[in-house]
Amino acid sequence: METPDWLPTHWMGRAGVVHMALAMVDIALWDLAAQRAGMPLWRLLGGSQESVEAYNTDAGWLNLSDSELVRDLTSLVDHGWSRVKIKVGRPDWREDARRVRAVRRALGDDVTLMCDANQRWDLSTANQIMPALEDAAMGWVEEPFHADDLQAHVRLQSSTRLDVAAGESIYSYHQFASFMAADAIRVVQVDVTRVGGVTEFLQIASHAAARGLRLAPHAGDMMQVHQHLVGTVLSEVPPLVEFIPWTQEAFVERSVVREGLMERPQGPGASTAIDPAARVRWQIPGVGSAKTL
Image 1: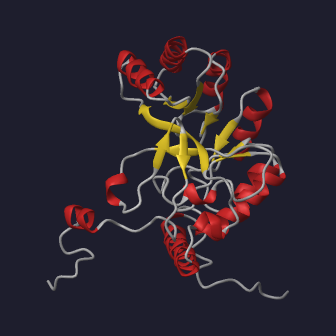
Image 2: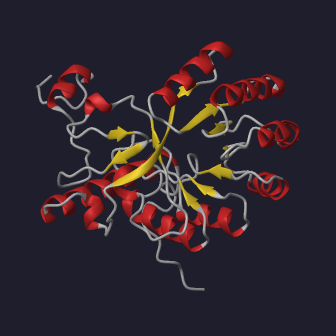
């Protein structure tokens, strides 16, 4: 049998930190290509929309009390957000159900509400809480199980009318393709920093579009590259960008959101340039410094 033509990184580069390092190199090359072309990456990739729909994750945290949770999510809606996400995964699923119901009552029916379990459930727990999530009309149920448990995702997706979402902890086109082929997910949350960069992201996005699935990238890049990538592959289902504003001060070209729409960057490149002042402010002594130790 002929030996496959594998890359030298075959034994260590298919997932995890090494694959993320490969993503960093690939993103940098696409950034350079867009800069040389004198246009933002989204235009280089064929995008035409000046803005993309976004949802906000920065209020629905698991550690908040019920009253804090309702207060913070209500504040987001008051500031123009119509799509927000709540974390679930308390030790007792009944607590999650209570919190979800309280949020839905406070926000009303016109706000799209999603939930994220961060792989905290088993199939039994998911089945018990699912009626409450269905009653609350969740936009999707994110990462209900360990990312390697394909069969649990398949069984849950086949038993609920809600969409199952995953991708934050899935690192390759082949793994995504397996999930899609098994009808295990309906929302594809591919992260450009965790798959092999822009190149593999586009492969996965095209595969999802061909199956009529929604693309909603996980914000591992804090939106900087994803705002360029969504909507560049033709799809029947409008994509979404996740908004978490934690590192915006670090970038020269920050993400801009108005009334739940993220405005596309206009500068050349992929919006990854770090603000020099931020580099000075957060530089770890002795790591990446230009000074001689």
